[in-house]
Length: 254
Image (cartoon, rainbow, N blue to C red; front, side, top):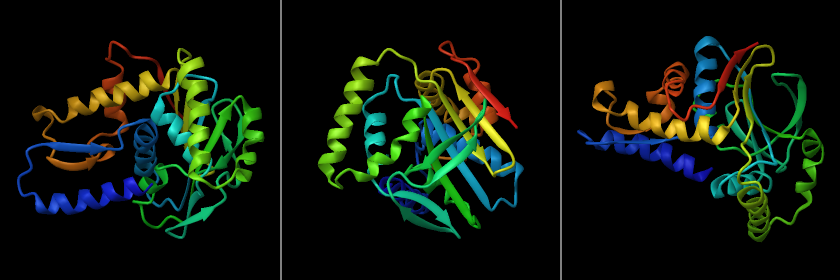
């Protein structure tokens, strides 16, 4: 979380100091944050006077993942969860309030947790309420997630959780593709991205596309920027559909 705030600070300071930067540095290049930012941006564009937003991430826990994802999981389940209330970021228990969201197939519960995405969402001022929500497949895992609130609040706890997650997802299940759904909702309208293989269709393609759009032919400003400042969802999906390693991404509105 602090790293994201540091990036925002660097972005503002260095872009003012550098009169003629020779290169481009981008952050927010992942699935969440990354693809999630593009989906939130798309939602903002079509809902100008937005005061409430939920960002939900739902994925299969019994699937492959790398070190960074396993570290993020261990921190999200042990650090205080975050939410926005009247433009201010508030703290709650690690696995916070239970929130029902409408996913593609049905309504399921998730829990408010600490995701870096909330810092990106907070760039938009005037929000009365915003949550970042995590929901797992299979759903029984979500129903018992609050047990993490009773773990000792030590760095060692995070380290041990990371080792467990990495043994499970980085070793035993490393060959299992990760099905994922990203949903942005204001309680009435839902925008969704469904990824058949999140770390290929989302992770790898966003890195490749980022290198393409900073090429001179796209006339991207030099300096430090978040990926969603130089790309939108329409452009991303257009690029992604042409990749040789394309795995299906479905974009839905409901």
